[in-house]
Image 1 (tube, rainbow, N blue to C red):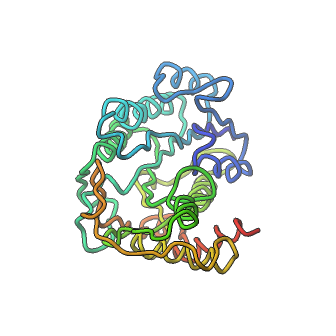
Image 2 (tube, rainbow, N blue to C red):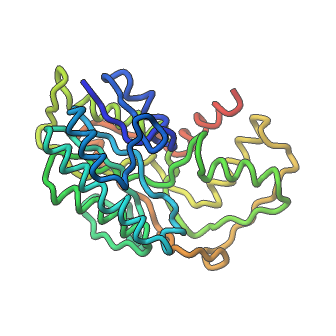
Length: 300
């Protein structure tokens, strides 16, 4: 089985290269590989997929600069909104299944219970609107696909909250963190491993058999917390593992209004994973357990 992975060095893409390797031949491309593959090069995307004729196309590349997207709306829409539709068309032309990652930002963040896949969307930022446009473009094509919405992704690589906290806790005396936004921190490796399991559970002898279960799914760790409590847990674990000194920065909770950003963040980003568990028996662990596993690798 041949799997085309678009993206090589991002948080999830890096983990996917390892997780997907046991399923078949993984061909990973991005703007820096030879040959190069750029989401902005629509002709190149089509040419690569039509030439390789993979069984799965896994798109782990995206425009992810949430605040900068408020100014670079055209670029964000090109990479997040238009390119997924091109991928979907090319994948459908060769009978491939597209796996695409989306985000909690497609919701307004005003719910009081975990969002289900069928709940009304309402992005409040340019980034969220671009990601929603990508979802809609994939659905409009109508080919076999999985749209996996995740949130609050962190890992040992790339730019993410965990790495930022570990750095700032060493550099500052006081660190103020937002305490009125709720979500489920999700380890990038678990996103990759769940993706591999999803592929394995709908593949028989190299052929795709999903029994009509394709579509949109939520994929995050279980439980929920705030950015502040997430930071507190990072600090506690890091000190216990000797990654931070006892006298590292003190954490203080603040409201979102005290930390203005160009892009509005959803106040509530908790996603229900019930559909993924029901259809594919896939369940990610609680966010605290996942964080402990991830940080155990830092100390190792």
